[in-house]
Length: 87
Image (cartoon, rainbow, N blue to C red; front, side, top):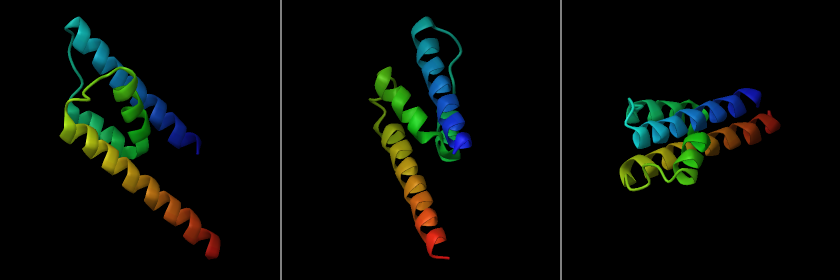
């Protein structure tokens, strides 16, 4: 559980830094990196940063892709936790 929280906080910080870098003309974080973070169970952090900082919300493929990845991952985790209860 702690690893999940730490991953999401880290992902939030990285996505927030990308918005900061975009505004201040600094080197940006690759979209691929944000997708990898979302795939590593940090999707809630990335999506939260996108919405809070109004960042990359016009990139529908990226936003909805990360949202889909996140929903599938958490559905799978829920399935595993339910299935584990019956074993």
